[in-house]
Image 1: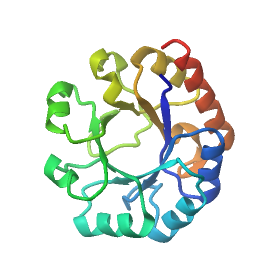
Image 2: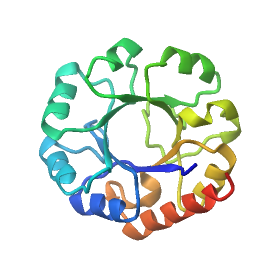
Image 3: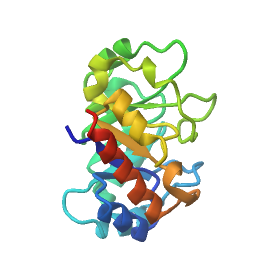
Image 4: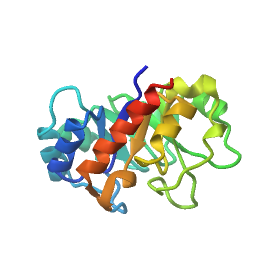
Length: 209
């Protein structure tokens, strides 16, 4: 099976095109103002407008109110929602879009219990845990903590780069991988060469699946 690739934190149309040209399956748009990768509605509309067919657009939210999410869904036309805050399953299911639940890998997390709790999600995105940071830490976590039988539901995130993603894919065999800072020149500005290298490394990892 081919591992899907998402590049998150896109802030410019040119970066979205570079990702698409490299063979990325999805891009992420961050609607969380404290993030250096936050985009306004007008930016998001411009980014989505340049994408070719079949590149999925994902909107990332952290404890956003329903009105904010509805505005993004209506004006930007995102395909999928990614929840990174304390949203409950019922809330996640009320926005007329499929969704993914992000989980930060605290020491005491029970992935089986969380998978059951968020059974309505299309998948679980696993990220490194740091207090008071909802994601995008640029840090990895111990991949051996991911049960093999859950791999088909997992989007692996957290500190992935062109240099370590081949090993991550080979070891975890996730359905997808998600990268942001690992393919940047600086926060919010992607590097086309790094994106291409990242996708190539994922494909090498696929050869061992």
